[in-house]
Length: 207
Image (tube, rainbow, N blue to C red; front, side, top):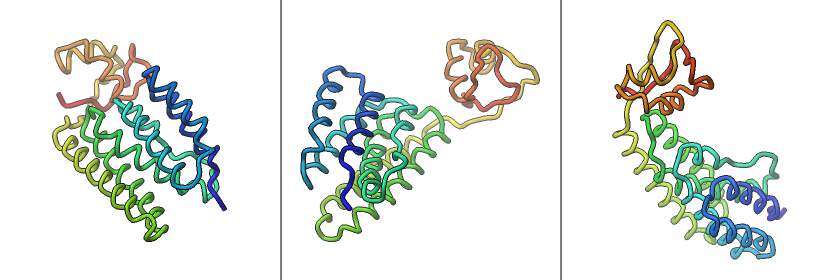
């Protein structure tokens, strides 16, 4: 059974609309994705890899990295190339992100490695015809893991903060860092939905 090229193009179109902010790039990708399902075999695969590279190179924040997800509900034949495209996208995107905490960078590294393993298994199953793709993809994944590992080593650790009462994020940022302007970063790490009244216990950057 052949992969559903329309489903792959639709998934990547959604990623492009979410992650690509440059107007010209977005227009170009929309045009290419509309035409991609008409391509056959290797031409289709190479076009989707090229498009995924542009999408991933648009990522500059953890939320963008998190948005590159293997789509659900695909049949096995379509999920196989989606696995490869997802791994490639994660590997290209991750080194572009300024990971703000050590656990965040480590989680990204783990995700790249896990998705990469699944993707390389897909490529390996194609045998000798896919040896060049296997070498290329494995190298991209290896480099991404090394870069994010270095980022994790240099990132700031997380500490547990307990206040006993709920306080505004600006007050807490001033007390923790001497800078109320870091309140938004405090909210992001704590994953608080109420910055005016932070939880009485939450995770924060050490410094």
